[in-house]
Amino acid sequence: MSNSIWRKKPMAAYEADMKKSELKRVLTKWGLTSLGIGAIIGGGIFTLTGIAAHNHAGPALAIAFVIAAIGCTFASLCYAEFSSILPVEGSAYAYSYGTVGEAFAWLIGWNLILEYMMGATTVAVAWSGYFEKLVHLFGIELPVRLMNDPYTAGEKLGLEGPVPAFNLAAFLITWGVTSVLVKGIQESAKANNAIVIIKLSVVLFVIIAGAFYIKIENWTPFIPPVQVGADGVEHFGWAGVRTAATVVFFAYIGFDAVSTQAGEAINPRKDVPFAIVASLIVCTVLYILVSLVLTGMVKYDTLDLKAPVAAAFADVGLPWAVFIITIAAVAGLTSVMLVMMLGQTRIFLGMAKDGLLPAFFKAIHPEFKTPWKSTILVGFIVSVVSALTPIDKVSEMCSMGTLLAFAMISGAVLLLRYQQPDIERPYKAPLIWFVAPMGVFFNLYLMTQTQAATWRAFLIWSTLGIIVYFIYSRGKSNLNQND
Image (cartoon, rainbow, N blue to C red):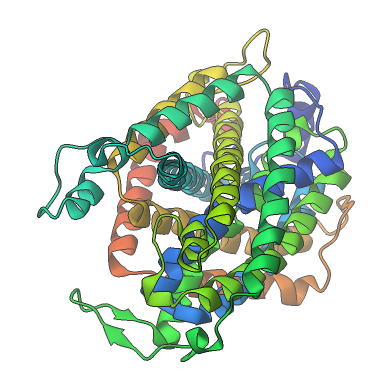
């Protein structure tokens, strides 16, 4: 076996992985679609709409969702084709390993860690915000220092800089989700299905009820004029819309989380592609409608950052609606966390099976048949980071990992068409010579629109990943054992 960093995992090795998998195959086509919707609907609608509209796009948030959806559509078709060829846990990491090479796959996997970890962390903080609103509806006031990170608590208390604080709610919900994930995929899927029904009903309620309270003047100007913040960063205008697109891109990562569950799908070659495309279509339509209703109900610069949808209904004098939305948001965000953390542990599992991560990450519980050790580790990291970090910082970092993975998979599926044109493809992306390059272009372009601070953190994380690969993973790789 070549010692090149571009060595590829043979297709036969993927087939062997599928045959000896210890995971339970219990997920149907609709179960997978429900997982996708469960991951997608949550942080985007219930939280990031407020941040993106208030800080970047104003009413043009709907355009930002369209831009993000276009990039996602191209990438989703590429993911769907790959998932039909290689129905294994590992998602974009596994697809890259079989087409481009090990070093490239490692970098993708390393950044998928960023995507899912930061995704779950963002949602944990958002969950805390909605939980705080929920208990407030019952007249209970929780201490600021126990419901916020040190920086946000300092701002709320009118103090400069961070103060001693710990987001206990975010910490505890993370451990609650972790316990469900350790117990098993079937239990996790059942819990997700129930929550998805609840939050889809409430999202439709938000769209229909909120439409009666839209004020056209709140949409004027639809694209607010450019403003330069104290940090020298441009907000609003078309630049703001593009930045908002990178922020709300986080809201779409549920469809690629579906591909991480291929190892637990009953008929992965057909059902995973279906679930990827179906969940994206449903949620894109809902996102656009909710963003229009939300910015029509409340002026964009007065939107609440932590719980914008519930706050919007409170502002128009519908307290009973606030109660319904807040309960749905608390439940809905829980399912998003569940799928994000589920996806993260399956990425770890795929990388550990290939020898790129220690055996710790592929340890399967003898009774529950879940990667329990890595699940507990993920729970620990997410719980601590969510308790100590502001939501806007982690959400943008998550988007960077997502954009890179989407761009690279779009290119890799085209490469595989060229390298192995005769391989069996139960699902073939249409117009691949257009779809794949556009997937690369859209997602790389959105990466260029993120803020400089986000780029710096992303490059530091990627550099750390390269160091880990050359110090540990390259030598431990299964493909290196016969060198």
